[in-house]
Length: 277
Image (tube, rainbow, N blue to C red):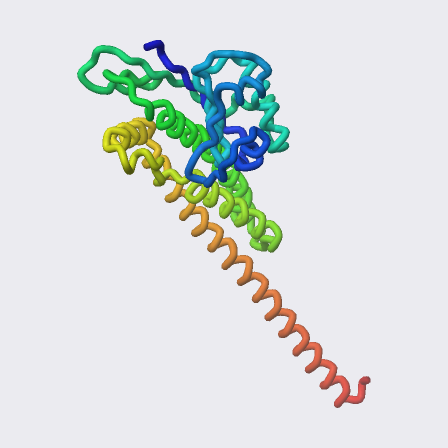
């Protein structure tokens, strides 16, 4: 068996698989849990080429695309332009920002061997390509979100710098935008990529389940997930502190206004009694 190559991209936060399926004439409603797999004549009609019969593209709803036995950079770029017609936010020029390459080999070995660049199996199973593609898709999607988390941290660092300089007031709009960024980050990471969810085949085939678990462990998806979850909880704690300080400052400002009005009223009353007004 010749080696099977994989190349994964994280190109969007979300891809509507059903719109693409309808365009390709695929009579099926896709859920978040399953990828849209394009191959054969369907893939050839999109790329306008015959290509390799073993080639296929797996599109995931959380914004990742995995090319299997891809025909080269030109064909991949052409396909990404095709996807962009459904999801205009896809930046084809910077598609390489979050990507990973992998391959599947069959050799005479006693057990499965995992490395950073390829996996070696003693016997080929039909479920290997989809499971490998799924792990790669989640890995590059996490890489994309990990960088977005860094941008959120930069915003918080700026707000902390303001506090250190004694600028205690933080606008509601700024608080709302930063909180929304954290919520969006949590949604993309914890809910949409569904790190803890497994493909259906892993529940009905024990070999598939064991292979998928080994891939998850090797790519450290669960560890990365837990780290992201912990960092998100810290971000919420920091934002709660900012919100408390901001509300306290507004409350203090209102109290000073009330005190000032009372003093003015007292002064006016004294002046009126003294006949000065």
